[in-house]
Image (tube, rainbow, N blue to C red; front, side, top):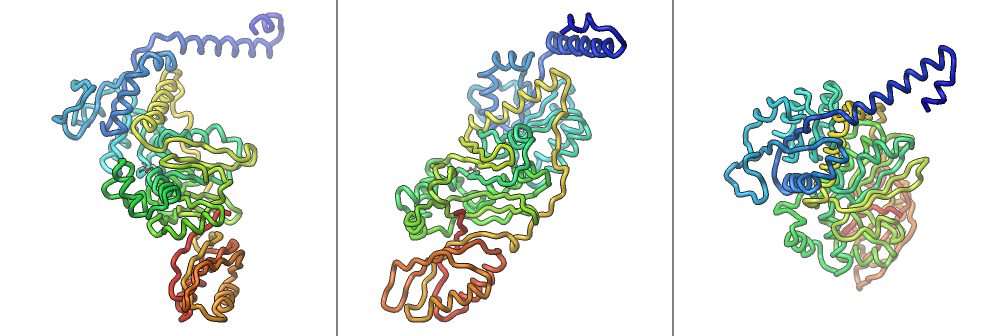
Amino acid sequence: MKKIYEKQEGFRECIFYAIICANEHLGKDFKDMERKKIKAALLGLGTVGGGVYKLIQRRKDEMEQIIGTQLEIVKIMVHNLDKKREGIDSSLLTDNWQEIIEDEEIEIVIEVIGGIEPAKTMILEALRAGKHVVTANKDLIAQQGRELLNAAEESGADFLFEASVAGGIPIIRPLKQCLAANELTDVVGIVNGTTNYILTKMFEENVSFESALVKAKELGYAEADPTADIEGLDAGRKVAIMASIAFHTRVVFEDVHTEGITEITEKDVAYAKDLDCVIKLLGVAHDTEEGIEVGVYPMILKKEHPLASVRDSFNAVFVHGDAVDDAMFYGRGAGEFPTASAVVGDVIDVARDIQYGCTGRISCTCYKDTPIKKFKEVKNKFFLRMQVKNQPGVLACIAQIFGNHKVSIVRVVQKYVEESQAELVIVTDKVKEGYMKNALKELEDLDDIYEVSSVIRAYL
Ligand code: HSE
C-alpha cells in the first residue's frame, strides 16, 4: 500500500498517504502497547457468578491472546462473607461496595446479582464512575433499560447485556449488530426453559401440567415459587428486551401481554397432536404497519415450524428480516456455564474495547418511537375447546355469535359426544383479540354453552 502512494504526486495523494501512515501507526501502537492488566469486579457469586469466575479462570490464557492483555477478577462482592465457597480465592471476597466503586483501577463491573435493587444503584454508580458494565439482569433491562443505557451513553461506557435473554444463545448481539442491515419484522421465541420442559413432558409422556411441574422442580429447572416461569413473566421480560432492539423502539415489560401455561390440559395436548401440532409458550414480537405487537402466550404450532422441534429445556429464537429472510438461534437458555458463556463473551468484548480505546461504540439503538399496539387490536388465530348442550341449533348459534363479532371459523371438530353434552373444538382465522374477547363473553352467557374450557392462540 505504502509503495503505491510513494509513486503518487500531488496534495490529495499526500493527504491519503498521511492518513494511511497514521492509521498503521496507531493500530500498531494499540496492539503493541504495554498495557497493565484489565481489572474487573464481580457482583454476585450465585450459580451464574460462580460460572463466570470459573470460566474466566479456565480461559485465562486464551483470553489474554484475544484481548491483548490479561484480564483479572480482583474483587467479588458477596452477601455473606462466611459462606464456604470451593475453588474461590477468599481474599477476593468483599461485602463492601465502596471498595469496588472507589477503586479506580477496576474498569469493568460484572453484575450477576439479579433483581432491581441493589443491582440498579450499583450499575448506575459504576457507569457514573466511568466503569464499564456487563450484566445478565433481564428484570432491570426490561423495566429500566432506558435509564441505564442513557447513563452509559453519558459516560461513554460500554454497557452489555447478552446474557439477559436466552442465557447462552447469542441473540442481543445478532439483533443489534449482525442483523443491523435488516428491517426486522418478526421475533418469535421459546425463551423459557422451564415451561418448554413442562410442555415437552406433557406432549411426550402424556402427563398433566401439575406432574410435569413437579418433575421440573425435582430437576432444578423450576424454582420453589415457579410463578415467573409458568405465568410467562420471565419470557415477557426477555421479549421486551428483544423487541426493543429488533424494532429500535423502547418496549418495556409492562407493554407485553403475558399469559402462562397453567391452563393447558392433557386434552388440549391430545387435540394438538390430532391437528399435527405442538403447544409452545411463545414470546411473540411483530413490527406491523399499525405498530408493535408484543405478547407471551401458549400457542398451537404446526409440527413443521422450526420452533416446534425445540424440546426439553432448550430455548430458540426465530427472526425474520427483509434481507436475511428467516434465521433461528438455538441453545441453552439457562444454567451455570451457558449463561456464563454469554457474560464472559461480553466481558471479553469490553476488555478489547478498552484495549483498543474504542469503548462506548455501540450504545442504545432505540432511535425510533413506533407505537405499541393495544392488545385488543392484535390479531391472532384461535383454538377453542368448549362443552355444549347436545341438541340441534347449538352450532348454528355459536356460528352466529362468531359472525356478529367478525370471527371466521376455519375448522370444527366434534370428537366426544354424550347424550346431553358434546365437546366442540373450533379453530378460527385471524381476528382482533378485542373481537374474540367480546364473542367469548357472549358465548359464555349462552345457556347452551356449559363451559369454554380452553382458549389457545394458534400460530398456523
Ligand atoms: N427461569 C428461566 C428459564 C431461566 O426457565 O428459562 C432464567 O431466565
